[in-house]
Length: 239
Image (cartoon, rainbow, N blue to C red; front, side, top):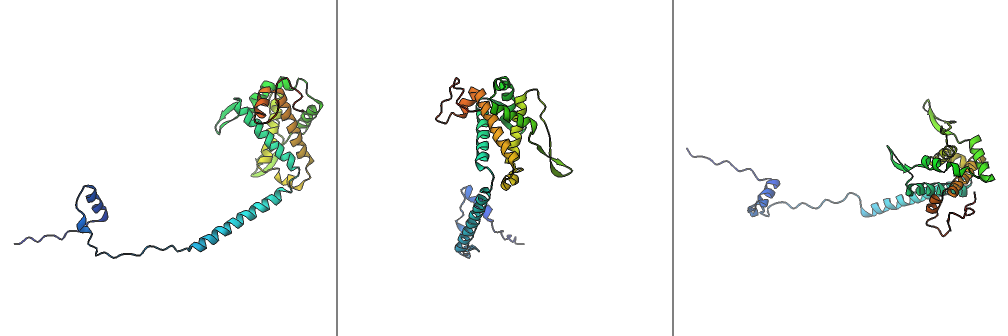
């Protein structure tokens, strides 16, 4: 009885590739008998894409314009900008002079260590303006926003520390947080919050007085500016 040879299964594309990798002859697989398929054409036309991008750009510009109009309504924009600039510059100066602390969230400026170290010199001979700023912060400290029964509310939270300056700088950081995270933006837009303006102004006074009490931080703070920062020039920074 004659043996019938089984029909060979066609080799898959992956099999052909493996054969080619081994140096095998794969010319027999290319017979020019296949069907040429046309390229897949995009379903979205180029001019339609360009139109979409133009629409998106116009929308973004509209958002920017509206935001800037809203910013024009902010009460005391000069004071808000100065406070943000001084605070961020101060924090940078602390970090660059190794006032650092490590937490679960990473490394940050160690305001508390700085406050404890210069506490005595800060309260040595404060000017009348600095005394006024200190009294205001102690008499009417900024409140802390908390969650109470799933609702946001404000609460009087006084920092517990034996160092008076440490307490003041905690409160100034609270002002920064309340402003930066948006809790005070609505009030500033109305332009009628004298208390918030005072917190910003007196906070700046205290920060400038800290610069006067720390030559090291003062030099770093003004390191990129054309200004004399010699230690003996105590009248350089107006407290």
